[in-house]
Amino acid sequence: MKAFEYGINISRLRKNLEELASFGGNKEGGISRLAFGAEDMKARAWLREKMEAAGLYSRIDEAGNVFGRLGNEGPAVWAGSHLDTVPNGGMFDGALGVLAALECLQTICERQLPFRWPLEVVAFSDEEGTYKSFFGSKAITGLLTTEELACARNMNGQALAHVLSAVGMDIQRINRARIDHGQIRAYLELHIEQGPLLESKLISIGLVRSIVGIVSYQMAFLGTPNHAGTTPLELRRDAFLGAAEFSLKVYDWVRSTTSGVVNIGKVDLYPGAFNIVPGRARLALEFRSPSSEGLEVMEKKILSLGNEISRKKGLKFSASKVSWDSAVRLDDTIIQLLQEEAETLGYDYRIMNSGAGHDAQIMARATRAGMIFIPSIGGKSHSPEEACSWDAVERGATLLLHGLLRLAREKKQSK
Ligand code: HGY
Ligand code: MN
Ligand code: MN
Image 1 (tube, helix red, strand yellow):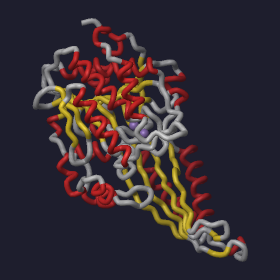
Image 2 (image 1 turned 90 degrees about the vertical axis):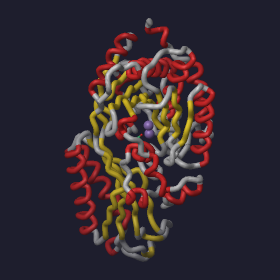
Image 3 (image 1 turned 180 degrees about the vertical axis):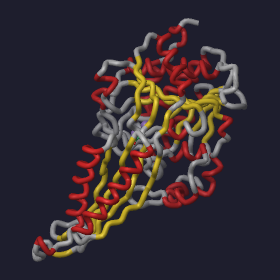
Image 4 (image 1 turned 120 degrees about the vertical axis):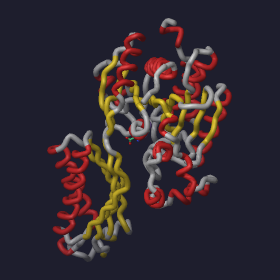
């Protein structure tokens, strides 16, 4: 069969992406479809209907992951991503991987393209970490500990256990979502690049070799709240000034010394008034590195800067680890296979690393995992301005289809 006979239906995929964007869409053009919120739950129900209409068998597991299957029992080839977004995010991050996978299976089904192994679309829960990063893929692979589940909270302090029961789920049953790794033959994820590289080099496709490691911490500087008019500057123990000095020193050190990045994405001052010297400053901080050793070095230095600066300023410092996800290398045989398919299709490609986290980095611990990137316009993501061209979407989804068919037609055992 020639390459063009395998084409997906880009108008249908576009319509589905635009429809999904209405769940949680706001007036500024952004999307807030936070995990387990009302819009996320509506989107899951919508996806299940789409799956059934496409001729797939759909189900939802104990962790809220949504599946759509084509074919019978037995080890399956998976493709997907996530439906949840960051606050005020864009319409492609996650959604593209899920809906392109659905489009591929629908194409295979309606054109009756032959395959040996079943195929499965998956939409993982809470990839963005509203409560727990990679929650759904970790539940499936059995990587969530009871302790992690008990500690998982959102930025407002609401517990995961509480939100799950509000949507009819049960934290005690999450471990039932675990799937025997032998049941997953391989996993593919299509995603926007979320960075500037492909666009700047005019390259159509990225094939991912490794995914960055990510660590997040809640940190606090504690000082003394006091009157902002009467307390002399030199006698204050201002928690904000500790946090500010710490932030600048951490950024300088990371930039000058490491190959990683750091971000302080949320700062809360307490009590929070014009006329009160801040008694407490809370920071949500994450850092990333392409290597595990890099993460360890960064953790040590960042914590020691927190302690050093707080001591110097007469403050107290506390730090509590929220998550640690190591860097992973994706499967070389999958990269090779996608490379061959890209060449058949005449797509130019580049093998590259991902600075963003993805469910593929969790799935890589259970099966052969691979990722396809398409260019992000202006390199923007986690923002309402996130965009990519429909031609790029079509190329990415077509390559996904070709990759899935190769994997679903394999003769030999995968491992
Ligand atoms: O934060 C990340 O890298 C991903 O978008 N969840
Ligand atoms: Mn994201
Ligand atoms: Mn994503």
